[in-house]
Each structure stands twice: as structure tokens, then as C-alpha cells.
Image (cartoon, rainbow, N blue to C red; front, top):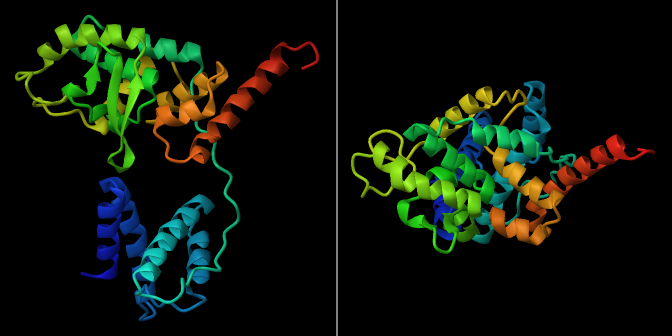
Length: 293
């Protein structure tokens, strides 16, 4: 087993890293290893100037600073692991620094736009009822799309009004659903899901084809279709409703720590980006409505 495989196995075993995360690490490390192979060097023993030269090469090729920052983060994780396990004496990238990357503020929707999006599916059809329930849950609970489509039938407790979500690192959290999402769930479970599945004993809560769980790509395609119906023209991302969930909570006075727990962020600093979004909204409202704004 080579060093990259051993490192990725450690990430999976010790941190419960997802397949998506492991693929990203493998892509970054393989690119670094391929670059070093041009100089007959190994990833554990690169020449001191090699990484800076590679960054310059990538910059000229059009890679953004954010891409290089992510790459450096991947390599540093690899070298920390290698040093901890005695494969190297010193991190070869220890002194490498990049300009600070200002986090991009996540795109979100106004509350009125969310309402239009939620109303877009035709709930007279089983597919529309499924989509409406998924959108309601996504906005009510701030789920990641992967968390939503991965829900199984035993994840929802309508009596307690909570959904059990398995997030990053296979960590579970309980998230309250709210009355509106509960009402749509009850209707969907009684009439929508049975109409969409040939075997309702299968675990997928939101089926796509063949009683299997819907894919992230399919659900994202459905969101874009409903956005057209709702006349929403601003760019959307798979996390748009998750961003709206967090931003609207903060706009209405929610505690940042509570939002962190609901989103399933392990680090409060990850959640703090939403304070910038909320602050920007407050400044806009002040400018629009205050007599001296």
C-alpha cells in the first residue's frame, strides 16, 4: 500500500471521512505526486522550492487562489499524518503561506422567494407532493442535499416532530421539523410515497427510480425546474435553502451556537460566515428604510 492509500484509509477509519472527501484528497495528492514525478521526486521528499514553483505554474494556468488554498490544506493534512506516523521528520510545506482567502458569502434567498419556491411543485401529483415535502424539510431543517436524499423511513419521528440526520463523519443529530413540514410529511407518507413505490418496505424515504433513494443530482435538477416555475432568476446552488435557513434564523434573532448545532457544524467558525450575510441584510434594510440611511 502506498502512502496516499494509507493516509486515505486513516482518514476513513479515524475521522469517518465521506467518499466525496476522500476523492477530493486523492485528487489533490495524486496531482502533487504526478507533478513531482516530472523531477523524479517522491511526495514525502520534495525539493524545498518545488511547491512554490507548482503554485506559480497553476496560477499561470488560471487556477484561483481558493483552489490553491484548498490544495495546500490537503497536502498539509497528508504531511501531518506522515510526520505523526514517523514517515517524515519535518513537514516540507511548513513555511509555505498563501494570502488569506476571504470566504465567499453564500448565496441565499429572500423569505418571499423561498415561499414562491415552496409553492412551485404541483402537490396534486405524487411527484409534486414528494418535491414539496423535500423542499419544506430542506428549508425547515437546514439539511445538506446529501443528508436529505439519504434519509430513510425510520429517520422521521412525527410524534416528537424531529428528524434524525446523519451528517459528516457519520455523526447523527436531531433537528426539529416545525408544524408546516410535519403537516406535509404526514400527507406525503399517507398518499405520496405509497404512490411512488412498488415496495414501501424499502428504506428510501424519497424514492427516485426503482424504489431506490433519489440522487443528489436528480433533486438538484428538480429544484432548478421549480425555480423556473417560481420565477426565481438569481443563481442557485445545491445549498441555497440551507443558506436561507441559517440566514433567516439569524435575521430573526437566533443564537449562533443554536444555528451551529442545527446545521451540524463541528466548528463555530464555519457557522460565523452567516453572521456576515445577516449583517449585510441589516445594513441593506437600514439604508433602504432609515431616514438617514
